[in-house]
Amino acid sequence: MSFADLYTSGEHRRNLAHFAALATLASVDGEISTEEKKMLDRFATKLDITRSEYEEVFKKENKYPIDSTPDSEKRLERLFDLFRIVYSDHEIDDEERILIKKYAIGLGFTGDKADKVIERSVAIFSGKFDFEDYLYLLKH
Image (cartoon, rainbow, N blue to C red):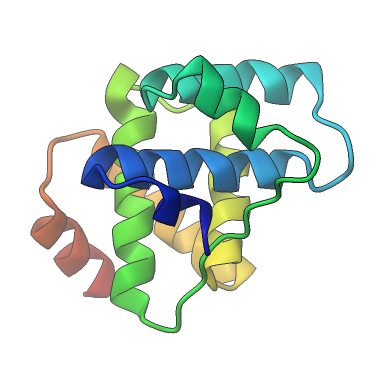
């Protein structure tokens, strides 16, 4: 069972699953750096993660994989969700970009494709687009 399956609120459940995956990515090299911790703290705030949820995610025995999928539309939808979260403060910094690339690769994008999707997404999220527009722009 994935971490997201433990929660029933749709949006909060997705946010918690995103946060757990990002925390796993940040800790993939064994340690979470001070910069990564600050960024994860910002994501926790943006995602409305409670203190108890935050602590549960960071227990050593809990590692939550990114749910990769062969369905390109599902991968784009997950990235769309994450970009909406990142852009909740109307900006993206270098650390967030690096973590998003790791997340995109974890979802199943190649490194080159991840770079292209991220660049296009950053351009799109500088304005206001709904998911259908986002999907259309990335597929065409």
